[in-house]
Image (cartoon, rainbow, N blue to C red):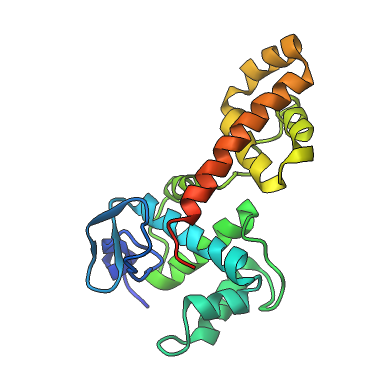
Length: 218
C-alpha cells in the first residue's frame, strides 16, 4: 500500500491493524457502529493499537506462534495477501530471521511488531511515538526502565516467588509511579511489607489480564 497512511481505511477506522470485526470479540473502545461492514471501528487510535497488541499476544499464548513466519501467516493469510512479502518486511524491521523465536511479552519486541504491522497495513507510520505508547499501555505493556529503582526491584524480587514474572512486571508498572513514597514505606515496614503491596498490585494485574483475555474468542 502506498500513499498517505492517514487516508487508509485502517486509519479512518482507528484500527491500524485492520482487525476484522467478530461480534464475539468484545474489544474495549469499539465505536458505534463497531464495524464498517468488515473491519472494526474504534473510538480512538489508542484503542485500535491496544486491540492489535492483545490479538498478537493471543497468537503466542493461545496458538503457540513464536516466529515472524507463523505470526504473520495467521495475521495475513495468503488467500488475500502476499504473505511472504509481509513476513519479510516485518522480519527486516525487527532485525530477526523468519524462524527466530520472538517473545510478544517483551516490551521492545511487541512494540516493534506492532509498529511493523501498522506500517505495512497503512502504508506508512502516521502515529507519534506517544500515541503508540499509550495504546500499548492500555494493553498492559510494561515499558523498559520502569523497574530500575532499587525499591521497586526489591519489591518485585520479594513477591516473585509466588507469582509469574509477567504478573510481577505488571504489578511493578502499577507501583512504579509511586516509587519515592514506596521507599518510605519500605523503611517503615521492611521488604516484606513492600512485597505485600506488590502482591496486591499483582492480584489487580491478574484480574485486568483475565478481563483483557475475555475480549478475544479462542
